[in-house]
Amino acid sequence: MDIATTLNAAERAGLEVQVNAFNTALNGAKAPKQDLDKDDFLKILITQLQHQDPTKPMEDREFIAQMAQFSSLEQMTNMSTQFTELTSAMKGAQAMNLIGREVEILQGDSFIQGEVEAVTGGAYPQLMVNGAFYDYDDISKVTR
Image 1 (cartoon, rainbow, N blue to C red):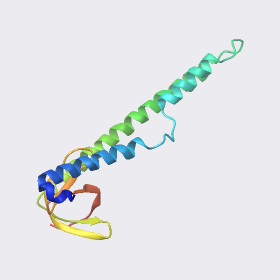
Image 2 (image 1 turned 90 degrees about the vertical axis):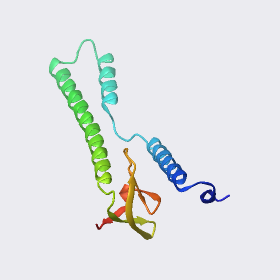
Image 3 (image 1 turned 45 degrees about the vertical axis):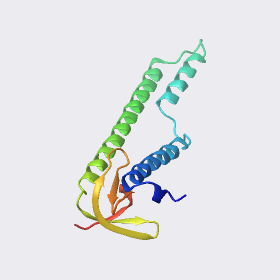
Image 4 (image 1 turned 90 degrees about the horizontal axis):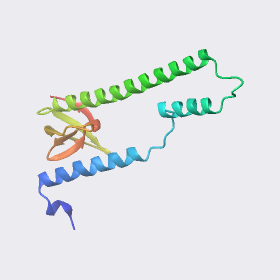
């Protein structure tokens, strides 16, 4: 059954947005953990404290240095999260500014040209060009 004959343009666009969001979520969920985060650092520190030699307790300076490292790690993690959110918001704002402008979109080996008719919001904005939605990241040129 051809899906194009059973759905109108608005329904197809909505379905395409949902499918792309689902695929993006699936791809993000499969990524293996490659870096240590603040929780891993804290677990190491707690394990170290639990297994230290009672006759040679950790010196205050070492403990303070490790806590300072943990605090720095936490602040860097928070900044990274905030930068990711800021980047996402900026991408959405840039996409909204393209409404009514002429764009060229790279789709596989071909280019699609047309006027941006609508834009979806969110972390992964999509543009409606010639009645179909395309990822914001696929834009290769903005002309008008």
